Image 1 (cartoon, one colour):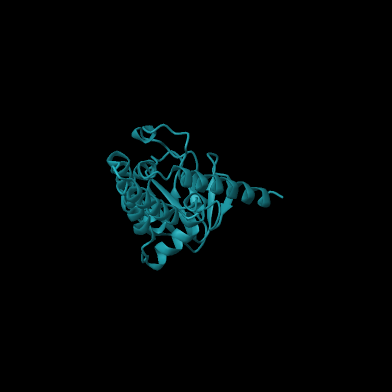
Image 2 (image 1 turned 90 degrees about the vertical axis):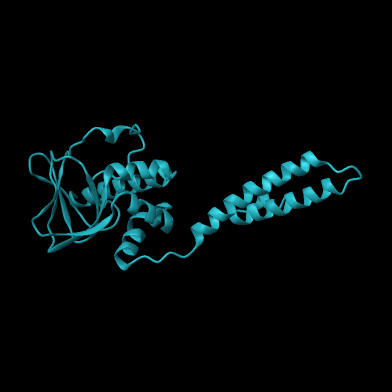
Length: 218
């Protein structure tokens, strides 16, 4: 009863292990020991212990350098990514911090989509196919320059080369970017069970761009 009323998964599993231990003791202390229920109890304990180790590993402190810590807090933490999951994404996607100067294109329409960027500092402009400004982008919600994750895409979507439909241009003195390789990013999200968190991030990004566009055109 205590276990099923816990909101913290670690506490729930710990209490479940305690309950299973009590059940094993009860079954084995009968005049005729009940081996089958005791064996099932041991099996349940082993399952709980496995997931407890996973939970504890995710809670172990991880040290990020200042740039990656800023990127994590801005783009990943609000949507449910843990620091360990963030590091796994970085490792899988050749994640790195880059800088662009004023006037340089971060990506151009028609170029093959290989990288997706998150604007950490500076200001960028989204430009349509007529080379007209659509909206200016600032760090915060709506700062992904390109498609972070689309839950409707088939798993093999990125097996085929895709092209940018718009351009992004740095219009500040300096733009600092978190850069991730798109195809490994998509695979890492699916393989790590992070589709729900990534979908929240994408929805937040789209709403941020819509709000930014609305304010500019008022």
